[in-house]
Amino acid sequence: MTAVVLGLAAAFANAAGMLMSKDFTRRYPARQMIGPLYLLNCALVLPFAPFAPWTWSPEIVALHLAAVAAMLVTALAGWDLLAHGPASSQLTAVALAPLPAVLLTGLLLPGSLHPLQVVAAVVVVAGVILALRDAFGSLGRAGAVIRILGVATGTAALTMTAKLLSDRGVGVVETYVIRTGLAGILFTLAFPPRDVDFRETPRMVVRAIAITTYFVLVIVAVGQGSPAVVQTMVATTPLWALAYEWRREGVRPRAPALWAAGLVVLGVAITLLA
Image 1 (cartoon, helix red, strand yellow):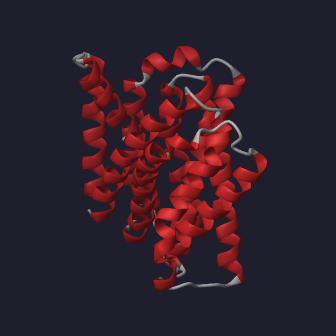
Image 2: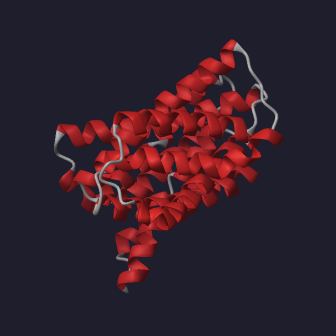
C-alpha cells in the first residue's frame, strides 16, 4: 500500500516537472539544460549527505555506475523527445516503462513478482496509451521510436537499480546524490550550457524541486515494495499531465480518455489486491 501511494505521488511530481521541462526546451537548447538541471537536483539533497549513512562495496559501486548510465540514456532520449516532438512522445515513453520494469523484476528479483502485478502493469499501460492514442501519428520515425524505448527502458533500469541498492543497505541520499551528481557533471562537460540564461535559475529551482521530489519518492517507494508496482504507479504520470492540460484549456475529457482513466484505476486496484 505504501509503495502504491508513494508511486502515485511521484507520478504527480513527475508530471509537474515534465511540463516545466517542455517549457524550457522552447527557449534553450535541450541538451545544454540537462547538466545544470541535474546539478540543481543534486544540490537540493547534497546538504543531507554529511548526516546520511554511506555504504560501499564493489557491487554497490557497480550498481551506482549502472544507475548513472541509465540516467544518461533516459535524460538524453527524453530531452530529445521534448525538444523535437510533442510532449505526448515523452508521455508515451513514461507510460511504457512498466513493461521493462516487470521484465527486470522477474530477471533480477526472482520469486518477487506476483502474477497480478504483471496484469496490473499491462492494464495501466493500456489505459495510459489509450489516453495518448492521438500521439501515435507523430511516432512514425525510427529515431522517435528508439528514443521512446530508451526512456522507457532507462526509467525502468533506474527504478531497478534503486531497488537493488536499497536491498544492500544504501540510503536515499547516497543513491540520489551519486547518480544525479555524476550525471550532471558528465552532461555539463559534454554539452556546456553556453546558451542558457541563468537568470532563469529561480524557475529552474522550482522545476528541480518537482523532479527531485519525484526521484526521491521513487527511491523510498522501491525500498517499501516491488519496483514493478512502483513503476506501474509512475506510469500514471501522463494522466496527471493531461488532466492539467484539460483544466488549463477548459476542455472536458472525451469518452476514450475517461475509459482510459477507468482502466488505470482498475490497474491500481489490481496492484492493491496483489
